[in-house]
Length: 612
Image 1 (cartoon, rainbow, N blue to C red):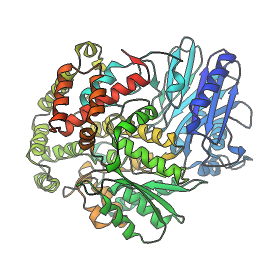
Image 2 (cartoon, rainbow, N blue to C red):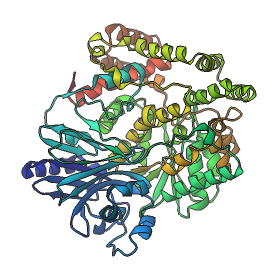
Image 3 (cartoon, helix red, strand yellow):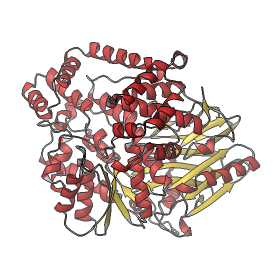
Image 4 (cartoon, rainbow, N blue to C red):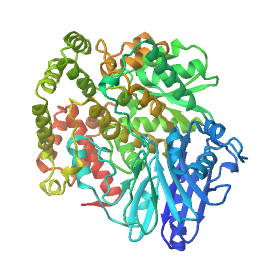
């Protein structure tokens, strides 16, 4: 895992200056090695965290054997050895890095190679003959790549700070700000970031770019499968075995490493499955990292203990953190600087403490269970799409069985029925609610919002709900914080469930199979049942590194009040309302999250010199 940056412009001296600055700013992403390629057209810079091929044979930027191409790459290609055997069996490789595999495969196939690759990546390849840059990001965007046009120059980097000029007062993206403060949504606006002039290079695409190009034209090489309902199959024993094998293959492929690996274990279904697979098939020690809130109703220690008890192999080395000791006045600013943008809640700080623990334990690679909820319809709102389909299809016994099993109360049932019987009314009400929730913000910022950037999915199209979870409201911010927290401590995060082969496999399964007896992610539970203790298989709640936010806000009320009063975007009326709730100790979780977002925005705007 690494940090990459690029200056694409006909100014060699400025390019070299940008490259040197990028190396300094991205050193935490790759403290083991660094390098710069610089000519009159381009500068590529690279900081290396050595995971595969620890010797100088993995040094970057790397030049192809033909001398034409130069690569700066961040990521891991888990099937790169298979690609060597399939397409490059006669090539005299110097080392065993996936970087060299990509570079030599590109020499033969150019962009066609992307369809063959399984993994995560942000790739820059300079064509020295045609004087143009090839750019690509992987299907789910686990590895970031930001891009900015300044004058006649294009600049790109793994993080945002290399793209900001010294003492620059950056402008914020008003739509991103409003969506975050009013709703808690972020990362869902496609290429847009919180910065007005800094964009994401889009996921699952590639582009060719020259310094003369005014715009980037990104082309897709993959699409989340949209299979018609008539072609979907039931979840029978054969399909179950196939899904099991697909998941096991994904997990084991991501153990590819020349350094020790670990895993974050919350006690939930997803991380427990990965832990069970490793305990069964992986023949080395496994470092487990967990963070809990002892003596609270959200403490998941008993589930973590159940996993360890199920696999008494002696492979596990346990590392734990008490989240009751969390203080946001000591850590929020630190993690705002790490994330470079505001973020959703203190669980992201909890995740960061696990990455810091891993680094101190000498672990460079961490697997986690992120992505399973998104792929397997694990959220309650995604389950409503399945329930609506069952209701409209008159599958009342299955509908009633699921509603009863989920036991989420009358309001959940009423919302589900509304979505089933009156989808247009539900959509209009949801749209109106989103607008109404903006009233906590000053009119001056609301006038700047571009509503054309915001699209709401409809529950009568299950594919749209699935797609929105993966490309919109969930995965983009999951992969963002995982990358930043890991890289801040020179740790590579891996997400086995975000293997496109899993997505392609489950896309062919009938959606009603994902919810059975009130159990969400039913096909995941069943296919991997052998790795789950019964107490986890039957879990219906979802917690995941819970942090006691309301208690923390009460304990640090003076600091919170100071930061909240400094917020320039919330109305005075709303700030006073939140302050009163703190003082009277009547905060709801929604109040607490609004306070969190308000103070996060205050810190971000100050630390990164942000204005409207």
